Length: 221
Ligand SMILES: [Fe+2]
Ligand SMILES: [Fe+2]
Image 1: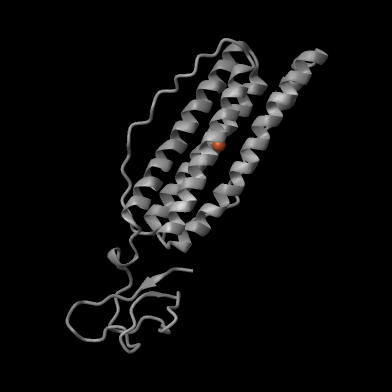
Image 2: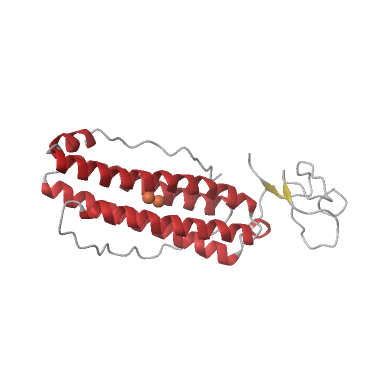
């Protein structure tokens, strides 16, 4: 549902038609009941719905970090493709798409709230890979790091009283549980396949992984 901001045009008059209450329709303040905007309202105000400044910066940073995650996994995918392990390469190619999705969701949320996004430089992945198992361990450590970032961000939404952003981030909290489970499982499956001499079969299986659209969708407009 689109949210419409009821805005005071500072002319000293009640612009809300609700006895002086101001806010965002359809959210309700305990003392105010808002009707759909009447003739004295404008459809959108950026200022009235703006995020806490610190929270905005954190979200912008997380948007950049999701793009870095995509870069990191692209580096891993390239490593495996060069090694002829195309199933593992495919696994990380799909990870790249997922991380891009995460970034695009952050961007969509900020745009929906009328925020500007600063496109910061994306850091160069700096992991040194000396063994085929290395990217799997780097990936798990990275996901654990991202989980910490998402929790810190979630805490910041609550501190700012931004319940809409907190709800938006609930999806990412759950997503990180899945990301860590997948990363852990990949290490276990790799170790078992090496021990059993079935690495080729595992690589073939991983070629079947396909990208799926995220279960969260944010309408910008
Ligand atoms: Fe992510
Ligand atoms: Fe991730």
